[in-house]
Image (cartoon, rainbow, N blue to C red; front, side, top):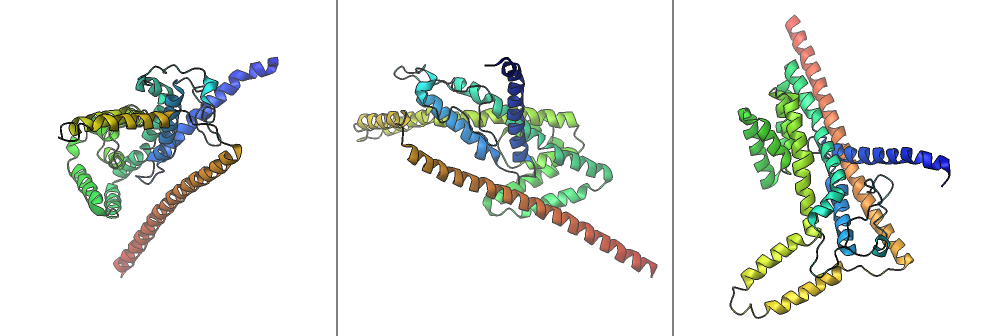
Length: 339
């Protein structure tokens, strides 16, 4: 490698880490901004990334498959390890019979991007807080409550009705809105946290109390819960637990216990065959599959973007229409007062 390229390598690494950090932060912000109407970037990006990495690590028997910590899916590029054969990473480190890639080992490899995404979701909760606090200072906080109630009316079904009741309870019991309550709301994946930022700004909760609880809940607790769950599912740990408990219950039923050993052996054989490295396919088939998968993925992303944009335009139009109606009412009242 020429000397000038070696000198530029630290700069290129720094730019790669900056792009990596900004990408996952932006995805987190896009997921939480917009009062529940944001892009579900965990389902679109972070979740599939963790699942693909876990499946690759389990099939290859090792976790050191990244070329660098920033070797993840990004805007116009995919991870380098996704299309590599397991032989390129070296012999398996977890190849003994009954051995399994530990959850913590996989978690350490995907923890950085998951935490960055969680920090982004915490940052996405700041606009509702500041808008609500500004409305409280200006004395127009009633508009926010009315806007929130009108948004709740759009929810239909049993789940929507229950969420509406919980939101109304939180609004009427603001004395319970403390650091611990905010931490719990931020830690558990739920659609109620769009209300927390508005309530905290409206009821005068200090900024650092709100943001610290939100940051800890979203970037540390909630992120690790979601990440560990996906790793457990893709690593068969959760499936093993369910399988063991199910077979233990079935073993207590007379007449079924004698068939269980044969069923268990067949299931284990099918799982080992599935988790084994798949044979290489022809390049023509691979290109066709990549084209089909990419088209479907891009279609889903664009539909989410269009839905997000439509909601933004709809909200902006409603706000503009309300301002125009208030101006017309004010002008009408002034004309009547002059008469």
